[in-house]
Amino acid sequence: MKTKKILLLMLCMSTISYCTHAQKKRGKDPLRNVSVEYLNDSFAVYDKLQKQIWSHPELGFLEVESSAFLKGHLRENGFTVEAGIAGMPTAFVATYGSGSPVIGILAEFDALPGLSQDTVPYRKPLTEGGNGHACGHNVFGVGSVAGAVAISRWLDGREGTVKVFGTPAEEGGGGKVYMVREGFFKGVDVVLDWHPSTDNSVSVGTGTAIQMIDYTFRGIAAHAAGSPDKGRSALDGVEAFNYMVNLLREHVPASSRIHYVIVNGGEAPNVVPDYAKVSYYIRSPQREILKALTEWIGQAAEGAAKGTQTTVTSEVISGFYEKLYNRNLAELVQRQLHLVGGIRYDERERTFAGEIVKGLNYDPAILRQAEEVKPLAEEKPSTGGASSDVGDVSWNVPTVSFGTAAFVPGSAGHSWQNVASGGSTIGTKGLINAAKVFSLTAIELYTNPQLIREATKEFEEKRGKDFRYAPLLGNRPPALDYRLKR
Image (tube, rainbow, N blue to C red):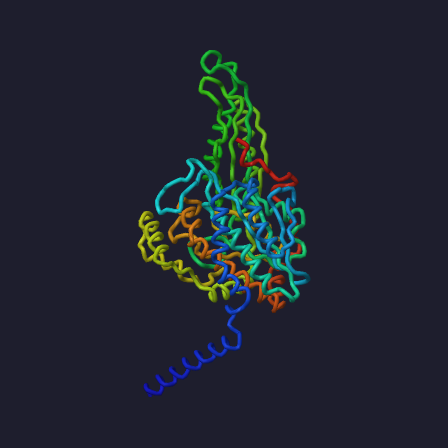
């Protein structure tokens, strides 16, 4: 009996192997198509492009060169590019093909301040206090563009459209929100999104909604020693405000997040400051709670101003929705992620990654995380954490997000370690894998419209029939100088 079972198992394995081989021979292997083959042949192209952007880290709304690099590559590959949209000079929409379905791909390219770093496994800023791609938007934008170009190779002669949305200033400026508000996502059937990560997985979290507000206090200048009674300190107003906010933290939902920096507290200790500014990020997984929390913090600002005999004004810099999860699209992308697989380091990359992990005091075994694809988890309603302007897109078009291991496992978000690995071939391997997932997912959507209908039905049910989109940043124009105002 045991021998029969062994023979039967061997027969089954032989049959599976034969069928797989036969499928590949007949051209049914999904990894053997013109889009994936293009990406296999284009590693050097996209390695160079992502390193160009990495070498020119530009802050939100200031990404002139980064945006130009991406637009230029898209134009060279037959895309029509509409630039300077929604009041943002570095924003763009690039289009290829015609007709339906219309698949959108998000591309980011802004850097972060103060995180300059060389591609070495130890702290070494290239420019002290300079900018750096600590969130990997250099590979983000390039991976999205590479995926779109690969899709265009497959689309030639077929019905369907692919659009790349070049979205500036994700790190606080909310470029996508303005593009949504101005209607640039209308007519798009599905939006595909990715983000550089330390693993390979489909995003199942909803994140947090966020309100970004600057509070400016004004007082009366005076000599701090000679005539302090004549002065009213704007810095006192800021400090009283911050103290009250720190007290109210005890009485807000645990999933809420409040953080601030004093961006201007005066010029000299012997002058009573007549001007001071504090910048706040207020977050909650639910917009209703965020609204109430923002109102309470606004009341604290007014109270602080009254108590210090100063005045206060507030300016909404930006605001994002939480994400609306789509299980149908998540399952679709998960299948493609499994087909593509994880990241394989060569000897040089493994040595580099090993040094990063050693410096973080992790077990070297954590590096296996880059090679594996995580199973699709159940949806995880947020209990706090990060925010993204992808949230606003997801409430207007069925959207799915995923990540590939473009960073060394164990690295923290917004860290020098991410800058170092993202600017290396590890980052390039991650973006190539992301581009393959984009192309395989798009091909399934183009060839099987039922997938879009199912995703749209789920989207409409979760959003609710009474939903009306109202951006959290209101009617304000893009805060193009938000990185310069200090």
